[in-house]
Length: 400
Image (cartoon, rainbow, N blue to C red; front, side, top):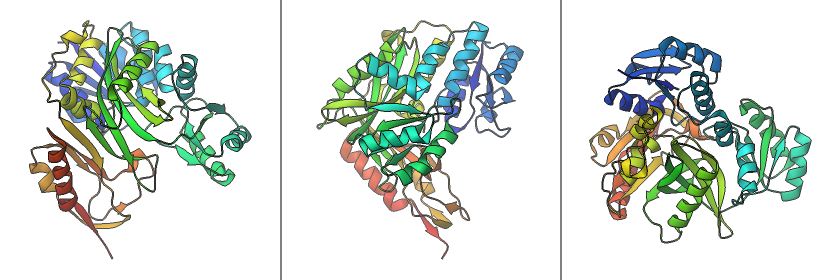
């Protein structure tokens, strides 16, 4: 029996662990907490921070896996690349991993190769960021290598910058520096794809919407095959070219773009599948490609080309939504509608992170949204009706 080590064992790694077990693999999973959500599904569990390379190397040498992977976790990508190099296993390489996880290096590479993006600057001191703010008047401040929008803030004044800069610095995992970018407005998109033998294929595109109070935090990702207002084929071609130019040999990708001044501006691109189970649930629904299973096959050394993916047929009108709940803040007394979510045939996943007695806070970053559901249909009209039903059925009541 072949062994696979999965670095990161949170909620979003459960599909990867389950898929590995379905494929008959022996699964070793490492994560920071002894009660990590993915641990019950694995054969062997080891407790270590995903960023602790030496500790994970110790576990890898102990178990001697045939492959090491992660998914839906930015902070694990570099660790996995390094572990594979140390053990001579198939990986994307540390240099490529750095290009996909260090947001400054990502920006430098993209600009050097002619891909549209906003102006940016690496800042070690508040004074450097203040000078950049004076130049543009409206900027985005973000950590160098965090995830889930933690520490990302839009800034339009020096007072806001004085709060945002140290917050972003605190979320930068390695370099004590902050990336500051010119703010560009426009419609936002996500693109998820897969790279096989150095050739990238964009598989699922969504148009994003955001919480009104927190414009950096997505509330809805609406996936469709086409969009009457935007050229998705052009976006896919640009995304494929970028991933290939960045040197990704194989693996999953998740990218974000903004349509601005007639161009798709890169927000960021990652060498892992989209979080909140985009790679595990939505990509197969929208493309017919088993992205998680293919990742495991490639990591184990199988040379998988585009025609080896075994794509299931998908209707051209298929659409899908990843929608996050938007409830007011307050002390929750009761939660309604969970039975409806369980029984709906077209809701393929739902999570509700709040229970009676909890304080429901505001969604200041991706990691503190109150929950979500994933639904699909073969027409937009059907999907809109499902969304309306969820809004009617799923709600919370509060203590007075």
